[in-house]
Image (tube, rainbow, N blue to C red; front, top):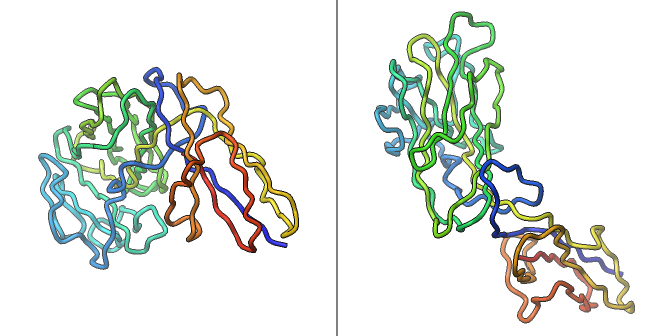
Length: 282
């Protein structure tokens, strides 16, 4: 007896209203550099030039009006009320962006996001943490606005001294013909005592209709058994035309290849050779 398994990994397009939540499936994050990378050095040695009006430093902790990319903030580095943290990932060397706000409110991050699909609902999100300990009093809390192409579309409000990362996000729709946008983050609170934050995992994910592969359970087929049908099931699709492309992975999901001619909603699995099989569809 042998078994095969399959996974859903989806890519969508469609038209939705700005601000609508995603009631279906999310696609892959298209902004892979939003996690700021990783490195064995405690701070990134080269200025990434992503913070207008701020000065990059490799000295920790950064002073007012400075920022850095680091994989570790130690407790004993001058500011005793700062949290000793690493970035928000499983990578011990992963970098996060640490910002010590300027005395005047203003932009502290700018980046062009490319690879967008037009007329698509996207979820934007970012992990942010107030670096000041909860026990510290009379400290200013960060307050961040997100701008797309210069327009404010979302604000966090005051980010609490919760001593944990908090995910902030919203949805928006690209316009016909739009394949890129200009993302800016603006600090709304004054600098000085407090208003210190770390940022990580900036993510853009497309949202589409709810999509499943049926049957959902892992199927076991005997070598002398019958083929089994796998169904690409899209629920509540608003698409005028839907196209399916089945894919298979031969390295447990690391890479995928198109299955030539498999473009129907039903894929018949009839390979009765012993093995573990991974399928998905676009």
